[in-house]
Structure formats: C-alpha cells, structure tokens
Length: 199
Image (cartoon, rainbow, N blue to C red):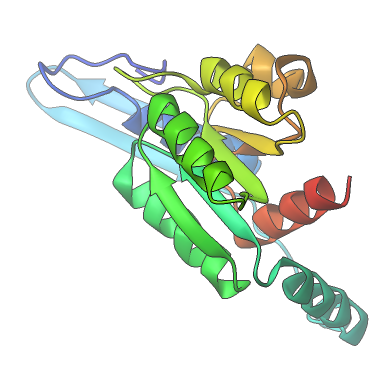
C-alpha cells in the first residue's frame, strides 16, 4: 500500500501513503498498519523524541548566516514545474519569503515554453525547480534536456518524493544542478538554491 501509484480507487494517483511513508522515514520514524476487511484500518506513526539544547537554538551565528542567504536570494527569478497545485503554492510561498519572484507551470512542455519566452525578452530564470514525475505530461527528465538545449547555462533542480530514484542519486548525469527530496523544508530549499546559484 506504500508503493508509489498503487491504488484501489478508480480515480487518484496513489501517492498519498507513499508520501506519508517518505515523510515519516525522513524523520527517522516508522509506521505500523493494522487492517481487517469490513472493519477498518489503523495507522500508528512513531517519531523519535528530540531533546533540544537551548544553547544551540537560534544562535547569533546561525541567524547571521540565515540572513546572509536570504539577502542573496532576494530578487532571484524562479520557475516551479509542479502538477500538484498545493505543493506548488507551498513552494512559492517559501520562495517569496526570500524575496524571489516566482512563476508556476504544470508540466515540462509548459516549462520549455515559459523558459523560451523569458529568453526572448532578454531575461532569464535564475533557477528552475522541476518535478520529476508528471502523470500525463512531459517529465522532468525529458524537459531538462530541452531547456539545456536552448540555454546551456540553465540551472535546474530536480524535485521528487522518491529519495531512492536513480535520477535523484545521480542527478548531474541527467543535466540537473541540484536536487530536492519532497516534502522539503524551507531551510533545505534555501540551502540548495544558494548552493546551486553559487556553483
């Protein structure tokens, strides 16, 4: 039931439980499932408790570094390629915290068109964050090749909920400059954008 795209429903993508499993696993937790036909299903989620050292929380040095990164990302232009509206809007809100300007498209084909339109205006996206798997649309794997053809210096980050996917492990082999494993936190997004832009 945690396998990607597995579903017993006539409609739906079958990604709900696989995403839940991914989130829990990334937080070093695990899930127990108890199910009985005709009666129902119970999910138990276990997450580790963490004792926080007050001295390490929000230190002046960490806050200074964070502010420096925020200033660095201010004014950067970002294109998000994501077919899930909620995921796209959350990522957009995160980026706007840093002062980025953000456009959103739903699949790879639209991303290529949007990127080309920007270049025709003598402008450019600083970063493209591209979903790897887009049901019914051009995938990130195919779209990044086309974007690189029209702009060899394009900086495209692959985003996926499958941390073990071969493309995530070897993203550079496919033309990507960085990676984000969904669901990502704002700090992870900030760090990866900064790293890619400075590379």
